[in-house]
Amino acid sequence: MSKPILVLNCGSSSIKYQMIDVESEELLAKGIVQRIATGTTGTVDHEVLVGEIGEHHVDQLLDDHETALATVFGLFDEHGPDLTSTIAVAHRAVHGGDKFADPTLVTDEVVDTLRELSPLAPLHNPAGISGIEAARKLLPDVPHVGIFDTAFFARLPAEAYTYAIDVDLAKRTRIRKYGFHGTSHQFVSQEVAKLLGRDDLKQIVCHLGNGASVSAVDSGHAIETSMGLTPLAGLVMGTRSGDIDPGIVGYLNRELGLSCAEIDDELNKRSGMLGLTGHTDMRDVETAINAGDEQARLGLDVYIHRLVFYIGGYAALLGGLDALSFTAGVGENAATVRSEVCARLGVFGVKLDEEANAQRSKQARIISAPDSSVAVLVVPTNEELAMVRQAAELLG
Image 1 (cartoon, helix red, strand yellow):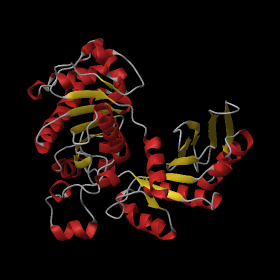
Image 2 (cartoon, helix red, strand yellow):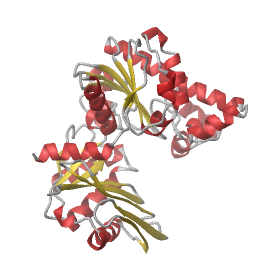
Image 3 (spheres, helix red, strand yellow):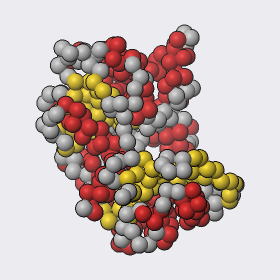
Image 4 (cartoon, rainbow, N blue to C red):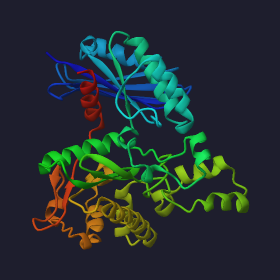
């Protein structure tokens, strides 16, 4: 008998969801809701993958997350799968601060704590809370589990998460490195350990999508990650700058009179590969490079340089390197990026099998040469499945 868990990822104006069976790990249904509380007609796309397989679409005004979820649940009732068989709901919560280091059963007290943490993630936590409250109201008889994007990095060493600012100021404002994409980094590092048959690996995981981060994982435990208090820090991303001199913020304020909000918007939405090349999609960047666009070439060089810089530093912190893995949209699909990164890592004995690297596959695979000192892998991430596993483990 199927034992499905419903996975919800609620944004400010959208909801992504999947229903996954705990025992078989089969994807039973998935969907996306868009334009919630925007004053315009919203859309719901619901895909059933078992039984009466099919895709179903609804156009409807969606005033809030409760209305949106009620519409989704109506599609489950009408087209399947059977929502009443759901044994739990797993919620993606972006920021657990220093309060949540593990999957957590959602209670009123947990929701209150998430509200207290909202200043750390003002664009994400309030939307997540709205989704949690709506789902708990509509499905009150099943457990709801919070899975925190920051949890995998909650136990970083103090030397890694502490910023060199006034201690009292840091405590008062909860300023420290938290890291993000933790569910993905944990899932991929565990899959690498399975593939290589070792639990004691020193590995680096590169989660390269529109948002990008890299982590150092020693024997299953994260010891460093590139994102910080916010997802702005670290690697060059689609629209985010990643690391810059913090003095640039003051400089832009003094020289151009930009406000904090304007600078924040500039660094988060108009920087990164968009600012460097005019493109956010790595495929468009490669097309521009092939057409002779020197600025696009420079943009990719900056992207690769920053990534190699982090990999080298993390290898030193780990005291060695057994495995390097690539995941997420760019990491899984951009063979050129993987090739150019690995070409600069010869000092660590990294050797790529270019033929294996060029092959496209949705399966986890090794792409390093047989004589490479470091195993290089492509591992498709699956955050929803990771959330189901964590929720199931918590609930026994």
